[in-house]
Image (cartoon, rainbow, N blue to C red; front, side, top):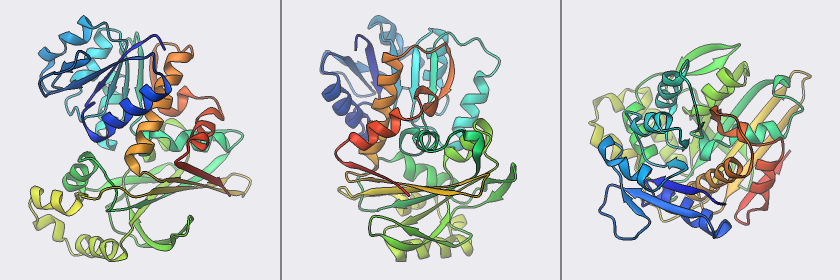
Length: 341
């Protein structure tokens, strides 16, 4: 892999994991780490996403691919990559930020490969769906169920997003129409695999809602989630039902959603309904949690971008892969379990 690859946020949990997996699979790769902290090693660059004047080192080091694993609320890195014709992979954006970034580029000349891989676990849901149907046009409905463990070792981004957006409405899609909903409402039940069993699940916002409906034209898309603790799941639903989140400060909400675990499994399941009335379920378990699977997915995207020929344009992560290769690489990874029902 003869590319200079920069991981911005490379000292964070997911960034460090991307570096480890990418280097172990591609020992000859030239990897650089971007961080706000002062540099120590030769491959470390001092980069602050909020200060574009720190980006000059990206050009000095002749970086080919920028991997963004830290929040860039103003999209400074994205627009720098577009301006300087650099390939770019972003795994950080929640739905509102993804929509904002994507729409800001429409109608502009793109002279590099700009990849949004901000869906769940590195943007692999659409890729797994793609591997299990003849055509995306055959799909009538997609339901995603997420099992989240508070014991998992997770970064701050998801907790901060939930703290900021828990009381704000978002949309799922029904008959191609947006339906406004809120997190932790509309109780349903889902039978998770891997010995987890029947759990109460609530509304949850993932960028995959937007990607599957607006990009892949699937008319009905919904996402629900549960915590490993049934009490926490019930408590958050009750707090939302009675408007308690509205009275809490942002810092307090961050503490509510923060995870201080040391590592645990992560599970999500995708249920597909096709136009001919058939159903299929794809179940994924990561023994080492969210960070490992998100980082592995990102590495697989990077490798595809380096090894294959792609035209200059905007991509979503699943568009970098042929029908089966993403799922096959996940199956082959020793701590990932993928089951198809």
